[in-house]
Length: 331
Image (cartoon, rainbow, N blue to C red; front, side, top):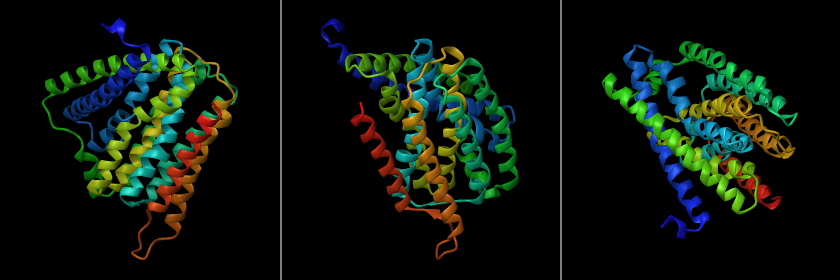
């Protein structure tokens, strides 16, 4: 029966199934991981800043591993860069249209400097057009160091109310059940990523476009769905600081973990556009949100608070649409 279905139709079905599987399995994986950590006495704040933050990047990590094992490292690089562009331009832009997001000073003092540092380092590594194994290991080695710094910084600065917000999404469940959901989530993540990468590669071949473009567009948007869901729900619940923190944390994970994988497994040789077009777009939109946060912190509103609003959301969404238009116009 499958023989009668056109390959492109099978690829489209595979992409849809892969996306759905990634979203569901990432949620189960995070819930199981967080519950296991909690059962061993790990502080809820640490769980929220590490396991839960990593969970929204789990789809990107698994897709990156699967693509790299299939010698499609450029798809993995496109996934990392495209996801970061989508997180700020699409996810944060859309969230700001739903609700204004108050900005706390610790975001500007700690999370944003780390993101900017990681962005600059990743750009230096991408500039040469090849991501070597030692460069991949360097990115991965920076992850625990910078996460430790952020955890320590937040432990000193967050108020009890903000810490309570970090704890709300950590599930309560018996350890055996947590281990079961962790295992199911991990296996489903691996299977879903395999299905998705197959569909993406087939689509790229059918339309004669590079896997890089598929990674920057279809895969990047799809793997950013967990961030979109988490940020919108956080905004609707009034947990605005978590919405912004989730996006910044996810972008840090994407550059240090997702982009490291192809360098370690199958070092890709990248076209010049990866740096000149895609990295520079990511850097530009990161600088825009940094400037916006700096401005609102300096110019508080009439209520004495600093918040990003619809104007910033429209600018970010406009940048995202312009990037996509340029991407398709030049390809």
